[in-house]
Image (cartoon, rainbow, N blue to C red; front, top):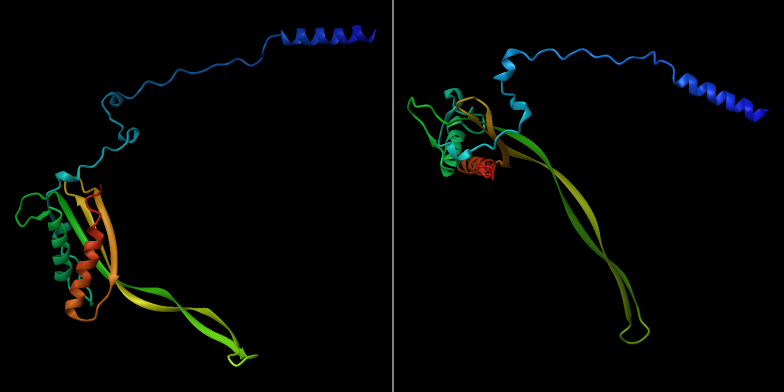
Length: 204
């Protein structure tokens, strides 16, 4: 009797599954594409083409403005160091009305860095005991590390290059070097910092 009841329940369940589904799938047609879609190129859908740095041959200061000077170095020193570094990389400055390939901006400022160095001081401890005329000795040598912190003033130079046709950033880098006290040493420090910043141009 129980088996017949179970069979009846299964049959009723199967009959219910064969009934009509109240949920009906429906969709609306896609709207037509705008007329400009056929002629518009979506650059974001494709990776950017590699930049050809070899086509950049000339440069001029951005907005015709030299790098700003500071109390530590004047504008002419920074401009000369940047111009020399660009010249070493085949970029020539334009002094006429011809369009340049690159616009260049640069700035210099001083920053303070905290440095640390470690001193390892050694000490010797021991004693002496004798059981013959020469005796027997023992001792111990060890080091005690001492970390010292000091502040140092550094020169930070940043150089920025822009495509003169579209104004897009082409390349940017910064570098630092220790500041110097004498005027001749200051010029060397500026040149050193600019050369470090420009060392990776053009990118490989």
